[in-house]
Amino acid sequence: MRWEGNEESSNVEDRRGGGGGGGFGIGGGTVGIGTIAIALLGSWFFGVSPGTILNLLSGGGSPAHVQQAPSHPPANDRETKFVLTVLRFTETTWTQIFKANGATYTPPTLVLYDNRTPTQGCGTGESAVGPFYCPADRKVYLDLSFFNLMQQRFHVGGEFTQAYVIAHEVGHHVQNLLGISGKVDSMRRRLSETEANALSVRVELQADCFAGVWAYHTNEAKQIIEQGDVESALAAASAIGDDALQRQSRGEVVPDSFTHGTSAQRVRWFTKGLQTGSVDQCNTFEARQL
Image 1 (cartoon, rainbow, N blue to C red):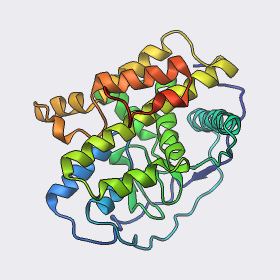
Image 2 (image 1 turned 30 degrees about the horizontal axis):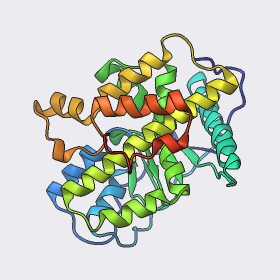
Image 3 (image 1 turned 180 degrees about the vertical axis):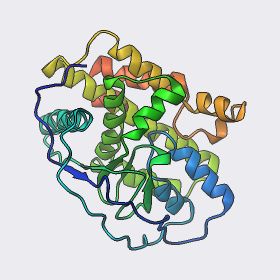
Image 4 (image 1 turned 120 degrees about the vertical axis):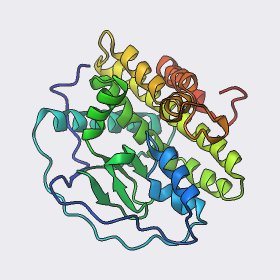
């Protein structure tokens, strides 16, 4: 992936080395073991914080107060510079897309952290659950060690794959700005567990499609994609499908518990965004076939 020499984002909080925060701070309702299991499975790869899921599944309520973690200017190593450059790519691309549709794009803040960190509204983020977006504070949370985990556990990696991960989380921010997240959360509270899971799948697949839209427009402007990049990103999308994850972890597939979509679905929707560059093509909620 070609990225070096491009502008870096300043919308960053670097909390690494700050010691992290405490346990989940979730308000409202009661949470049982089954709910926790659903939340951790649903958030393990490319979803929201388990705190967000737990809060929704337990009936909502006001989030517990969490003290803000200290931050400092971001480091200047290659990995950090890469992440900040990708974030800037997303800011530029989505600003242009929103402007073309008569709207204003407000970018999210990226929080870099180690191990765990407090959020304002989504409990405590932990590196074990992977990158996530918190709609309450409009921040993307990322422990860079996750990229090593992807390589070690699923044998997928490369910078464009990492960019796809970041772009997917920014896709959730776009959903939040468009009002999609709020509508989905409201609907989910009135649905059965199976129906809520099915709705979550459409949310995640749309974020995959938005990541593809980002890649299309950024490549048009900056020619960032090199040979093998798309293949590596598609391999990552396939590796983190619900069916692949369940087959690896439990030896069987339970479709009713899917929250992110199958490998084939994730590949299909990322590819659709990448090939068309059209937000209109990412309407997973009205798609008859995912």
